[in-house]
Amino acid sequence: MWSFKAWRQRRLLARHPVADSAWAAVHAQLPILDGLDAVEDQRLRQRAVLFLHAKHLSALPGVSLSDHDRLCLAALAELPLLHLADLDWYQGFHEVVLYPDDFRSPQQHRDASGVVHEWDAEHSGEAWLQGPVILAWPGVQQSGQWDGYNLVIHELAHKLDMLNGDANGLPPLHRDMRQSDWADVMQSAYDHLNQQLDLHPHREPPIDAYASENPAEFFAVCSEYFFSAPDLLVAAYPQVYQQLHAFYRQDPLARLQRLHGHPHAPHTRPMA
Image (tube, rainbow, N blue to C red; front, side):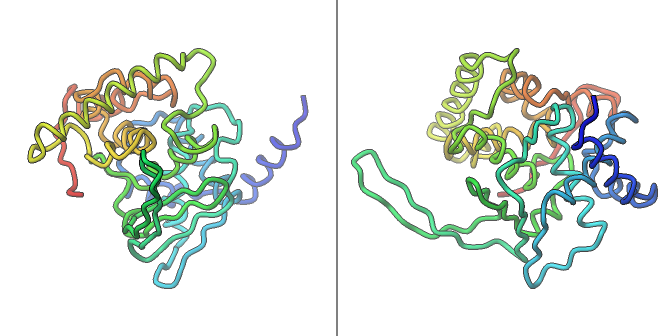
């Protein structure tokens, strides 16, 4: 059956081919793309082009974006969607705003007694419901290694989460997934992380402590680890890895193991 959307995508790809040398440069900067097979790699290459035509990258003063920079960001953005059906998963926003550095953002929280607390916090990224994705450029440049940090994937995981409304750690699940299983696994791991931080405040937690902020941040941080430090996530919370494997339809741990030739490659984690 003829599809206008598919025709338009083919037309865009034909008009904006990515040279082999340009794509090789993307791979050189983003090691987490290593291990993709030829079909996956070509699909990611095409989807990166489509992302750049669907979303506007707004660079604020102090950020200079080259074509290579744009392509790297798009590749990171599309990596989580690589095996998901084309159902417009990144709907609800049209702009990615790039700040030259971390930025201060007003925060608000209503506690259990109904008191509203307001403060300013320094962030590297934000995702607004029905609004843009905001990224600090240094964080984007640091993304793409096998080290457990990926600002782009983190903020776009929030956008997937928001497809059901406010971010709460529950993105739209596939029909072969059970919401009760997801909730049990994620809640149990989230509670365990908070317990470990309470009991051992000076001990390095199993994953980045920022995941303990709320269920939405837990999902976003675990998504970062799933793609950029899958061995650490499996070691800490194997059932969380399995739920993300079912959701993203990918197995980054298998890619990492193939690259290193053994099941447990050493990793370092960046300081918060």
